Amino acid sequence: MGQDNLERHRRYMTLSYIFMFLALFTVVTAVIAYFLARKVVQAEGVEVWMNAQSLWVMRSVILFIILAVFAALWFIPACFIYWDSVLWVKACAVTGVVFSAIAWLYLLNAWLKGFSKYMQKKAAF
Image (cartoon, rainbow, N blue to C red; front, side):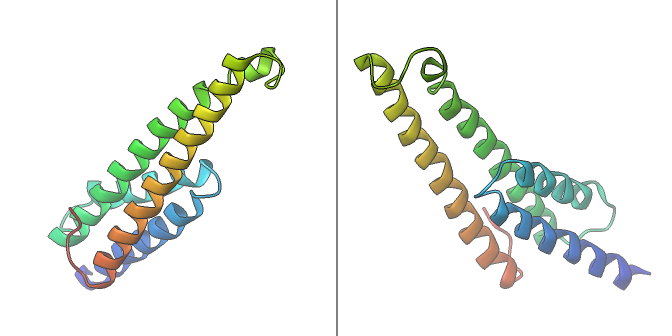
């Protein structure tokens, strides 16, 4: 029974990393990755390195979503005013693109670091 639980937790973590990678393309898969990693955190008898990995995924996804929401706020003026008509609206749009790139690069870096440690069966910090 214990080996079956370890395999199930590894499967959840593998799926979590797959959905974390797919979160580079859409935020919806970030939420799925979060909930898959949450299942591992709440389980009893999980190995320490796997628990640390799931906490890493949860932390990275939460920070990515916060960064993505902050980046999306900069695009609000473009909904009401044509982005090329006023200089400050263009500046907001460019700032939104910069913060979107920062959020995307953060998630890519977190995924690469976490997945490489996951393949080595070590904790990610």
